[in-house]
Length: 301
Image (tube, rainbow, N blue to C red; front, side):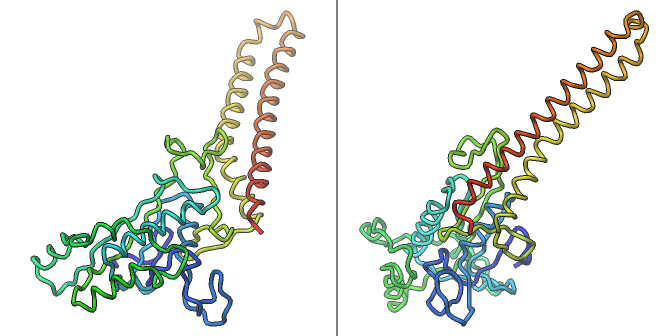
């Protein structure tokens, strides 16, 4: 791969997307053995969603960045799509479909000639697939080897029908608070980034090339930072307006010189009005943070 794992890219050499798909020898997710082997892609997907920026989970790429590819028939590709959609619907709150996309990138080799590459890229894996298989439901939330599509893939391989190798890209798009499709994710007037919990109720964020599980204090800090980023420019603007009004009053003392009480009264009104607005904003800020913490406490342990 032309890049390494960072804030925007994560490599997975397998196709275990949700926690239930992990093999039993894995110590991650819902299993509890000592043999640490792999973690589900769900954690990284959740981390990208909660971080707000665009991120891509590359399935079929080793941790070292070597593109190994995944042998996927048409039916197995549909299984991957169904698993991702089901996973996003199980998040709390659910993830709207405009916030992610799934790409299947054909894997080509350097030693291949141009014609061979074009044939691989343009190959339709859905050709010659019976209609009843295309509409047949997949077995989700289980290891994908138990689904009928894996048996169909094995049968095709036995008959010499080799499936194309793909790199699966699960793309999480950058958070857009003004998108009209934000149904579950719309929080408050400031359009704050929503916090999603995984299918097991955990919350993750992306830190460099690693994934960090959040505590209640972490989520509190995230909400506080977002509120400050939203309200501080307004508070600074009010303070600037106050200073401008003070300068105006200093430049025109003769108009109020005849009545010192009137000058002090107007000056006091400006200060009181600005202080009330600033206090109101701060109260709203802390009220929002408390509301956000109460929301996430439902699923953060």
